[in-house]
Length: 498
Image (cartoon, rainbow, N blue to C red; front, side, top):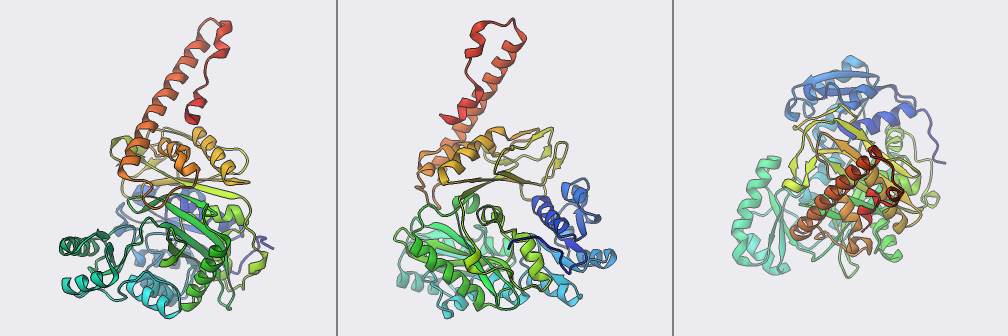
């Protein structure tokens, strides 16, 4: 049912870098499709360049001069003879103009129609379209705010606290919480300023703030022939500064009836914009079980592997086959959600020193292994991690028969994961997954508060010191005269299982 097969695509250009470019290249090769990589000067020796059949330079290190240069990417497609472009995520993946330019050049766009990208890329227009389609949305405006007076009026109508949000973007940029009328003017000014600098558009809208929500999203797949299925939900509530860092599926607190309603609404949302390909409909889940449309990501998600682990469906291969014109080769009743999966995003960041970026050369690199452990990585031993791009270097994805097994296996895999030469968030994630509230599923989008992050960071730092000290002690014992008592020495592995 979910078998691989050759597609009608002849050559795919992957307009991205890092682990997602490697992921797409692998899927293409399994389908028998040659690949073309593009790279900046900083990525000349990158893993995606090494894995592709062909590779072309497209400019200097800054993304605005390379990975965001649509003209250069299209020129490489012409020179290489590629007949399709897969954008991955980030960069140009949700740029409707780029998608249209790909189609205008006579190429296959491995993504949804440009119009769907455009509509869902506007927070205000997407809210209006969803409201018309009967999709529940958070109370608020469907048009950008004109001025402070309108913001005050709407806030009084829907009730404080409210959230100001950039109409043209996401990722926490241009967002401000407002708890009372006295805060609104300054918050609006700051939100507009940040929106303009981040997205080139200072439009801001307002909506009711859902207190202590969970961030739950539904994966959908739609073909160009009217077929559409969902692949269940993912809980993405573990976030730091509005950026997801740990995801899991299924959501540990979602009742079956709510899951059924949410997945049905997700499909309604996708159909409302004529969606084709892989997409994700995101919701805020209230403590009372109510849920509201948040946004739709019109691309592959970073966290797509956990859905693959519990359904057995290769989402990238599905994207390619749908883009080649194939109808879905399975129906909703064929999809089963088996077991539990967790993903940790591995960032080149130094959590112990203010989460500072940690670029540099990877002097040592050992990925974890064993049953049902997967690492989607864009690096290798000896690779240089540049400062110019997103600091995520890899993703650890683990499956278990149930949530407890998935957590225990993830902890074991995090202990095995070794990166030398740069700092990573691996020690921090050991503490997140060992946290009693996470283990019990008691969390929402505010789980990683500043206080909790500080505490977990301190624990991670102390654990690393303990592991290193135990390892040094073991090394000294190995080089000394063997004594009967040496065998009883504590193992450094125990430190992450307090």
